[in-house]
Length: 113
Length: 118
Image 1 (tube, rainbow over the protein chains, first blue to last red):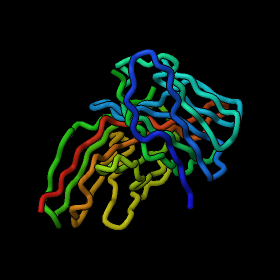
Image 2 (cartoon, rainbow over the protein chains, first blue to last red):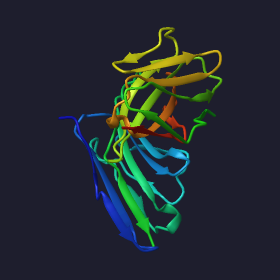
Image 3 (cartoon, each protein chain N blue to C red):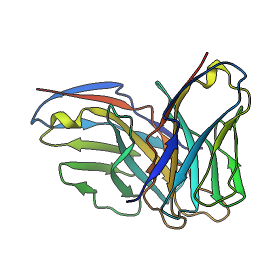
Image 4 (cartoon, rainbow over the protein chains, first blue to last red):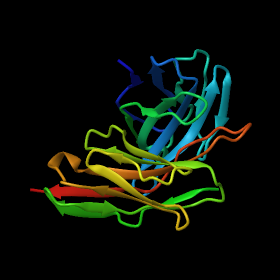
């Protein structure tokens, strides 16, 4: 079964405590990305990766890092979380080339106190 | 830069009736794709329907259809025979077509919360 998994699904943390949200896919997709969803703003892209070791900034990259050491994994790293990073985060994947369906993970709800 | 606008933050419809959700977009591209995603209370993002800009025929998926007006840059979603399970947030999204050297991301609207009333 095609899957995009994210962990954790829910996280409460405190300002400044480094955290990582993992994303894993079993569809062998080259393209992976991270979005955050905030009320009234829809989903905004944070970072994306077109393949292993190739990452680039999306629309709202400040305060985030990513890495792509393996094709299936694309973790999102918050080195020093702040309350304005409280949000719902989605990982998404799709194939390269002519437009294919984008598959979303189940979401990670993050609260930074 | 592309923008996507959904001007209806909330809508409601009686079960079994038809409802239309509006979406407009702004782009200078000629080749692009448009999508409607559904987000139920579970927060999962589910693709409802997609439209290629080069196709004149409006896309249809069972009870879901779109009215794609390329000149007006409008992309509305019609849901026929609404069901309680259609209650969700609906997002309109835009993606540029193939362009060398550029990755293509989805640009989302702010969403429309649809409630289907029994």
